Length: 116
Image (cartoon, rainbow, N blue to C red):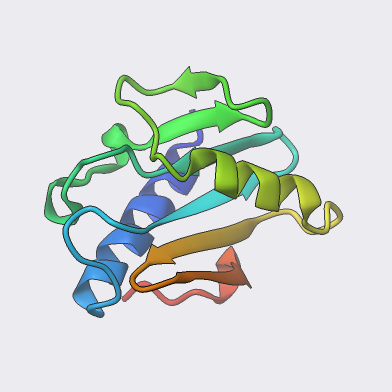
């Protein structure tokens, strides 16, 4: 389910580590499929270098796990509220929550993010 989106979210999370934006397991990327009303997020507590698309968690817009065996990020409900508030006419968005000294939210269309 949402295999391409899981792969993209996995790659985006690994890129955060590569760019030095995150450390340990803090901060993550997620993406939404508006047509299916589902979103994909990094699992909680999994080191970035251990992430795989199969470890990503798929949830509905009520926060119910639809696919995945791991616990979703502690930031899931923050991402969910962003998706609920964000412009619904656009199909896919990425929400990054990066925790350092304060919270920083970055939004961009998934098609505009370069992973490699």
